[in-house]
Image (tube, rainbow, N blue to C red; front, side, top):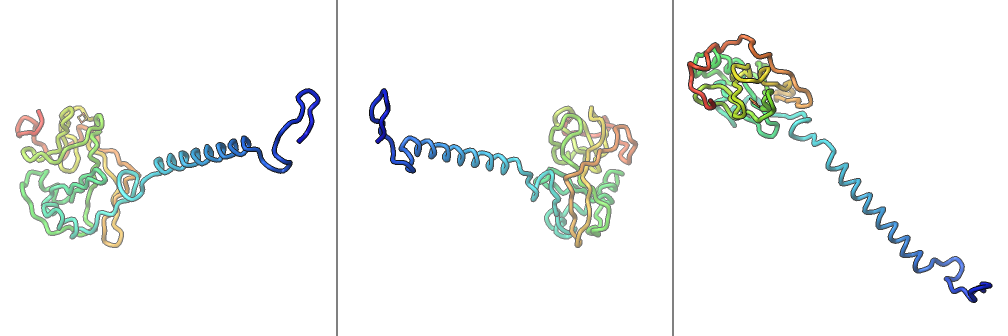
Length: 207
Ligand code: FES
């Protein structure tokens, strides 16, 4: 206990010991620090890119055989729909035969070295998701404003400035790998392609 000239004896903790109020203050500081760390950690974890699937990742689709088992019509030129990366994976030689108007063309399961294209399902007009192939027209038809694309992603009608964008594809150990970290711009609208049908001459899924 110490003496103060005006207030008399002053009570406090013995020297070297922490007061109860000081202890509470420290605990409050520690608690706040822990909460802040937890918040910062959670924010970083939330913002950290997901590298195993979705855009921004390298995605292994599998071999031509596994794709063809999952989607037998892929060898006939119909797109393999891969939703995890929002893309259509197209066997170009068989797809081209359809676009050229040869109808149903059954080709052998493509060799992994064959030409393929991974089309992004994001419409290059205003970004709507492009629906699956319209059976009537055999084109991809955007429901938002009516842009239309062939199976190979070439622009055929509507306000979009170009065909569908795509992702680079490589073959690693016989498996197709799509690199969604890079987007390849689609061919400009008006580019002549194989499918010369006019929009009036065929049935459509959109107006
Ligand atoms: S977003 Fe597809 S046509 Fe407009």
